[in-house]
Image (spheres, rainbow, N blue to C red):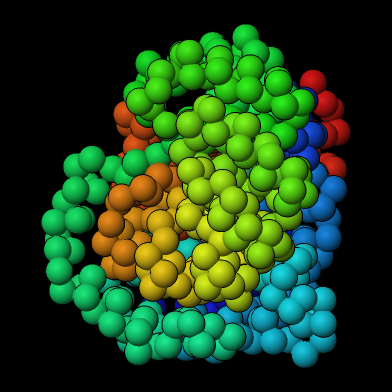
Length: 435
Ligand SMILES: C[C@H](O)[C@@H](O)[C@@H](O)[C@H](O)C(=O)O
Ligand SMILES: [Mg+2]
């Protein structure tokens, strides 16, 4: 195992034409082509490491270039030389003396970092023969903490506090939690019923179908005309009733004052949460919305670019629900920091998964959170979108509105070779000979 040498990195610009059917659309992203900067770490051992970062259409170009540049940090390195100090590895990428100027730790360069770091964890998990959640859950707390960069967050979470959180979860009830996940899976919600570009009939019909499939939590895109948002919300409510949960997502559409008004109006739908009511960078704005509309829980995170932002959202009491993203931040390493921060501030994590590959990724992070950190399922649901899973070698399995615990070694993110060819941009058939 020590001798696994990363020999090269293949980087692919992968785009799916989802915008043609309004899949993934919201009030701000009206024509999203679900895309990925996808990378494959080739090794001397036959094992590969796969990673991607989620992007939309044209943006993929830039991220692909950034992944190519950052590949220099993994090529000609043994896996062991990386895993013996995962924190140092992640710091090498985030602290590149010239790329750092592009962030730091945000934007295109950080998205690229996420793809590469996730690919390394995928390779690591395959080499150990374990699904990623299990690799993490089996690691000693001290080993896990070596992967975490405490710089800029230790004023809110010290390494010792993080160790205490991990130790407590390790000693109490871990086998029972694992048995529960294995028997019942992890609770989830579906976003696929309510994309912004869907007609009212489609929303009604998809809500009916999802209810019949066993879903209990549903998300609807808002941020359009106020009366229309309410009308669409009531259509979903008519179908799902008032005991099932309905969340609403505005995708950053409003300024703070408008967000306060609109959240108050939408309160009549009894939303489980209001997601991204305003700019993802406006921490104090979120805190104000939360204070002024106390009966609606506030959620954000899919555009939160690093652990330092999450730290401040938590310190400022600006959110009720933390929606971490598996590849907007610097991959597994930074998400370990975010999961620990959420535990310290007793804030539930409901990961973002509206994109390609995100469901496949986040199921591992939530399972690890439950087993080894928060030890709770209260108010925690993983997002599910019902698109593009057919392209994955080991796609997520959903039963009765819950994620079934993955068992295949790795991070579940490998895309089939024929899909990589067909959807490569611009040469793949899907683009050179569009339907
Ligand atoms: C463009 C994307 O589909 C977003 O609309 C999506 O990530 C969304 O915000 C979500 O919460 O899933
Ligand atoms: Mg969202």
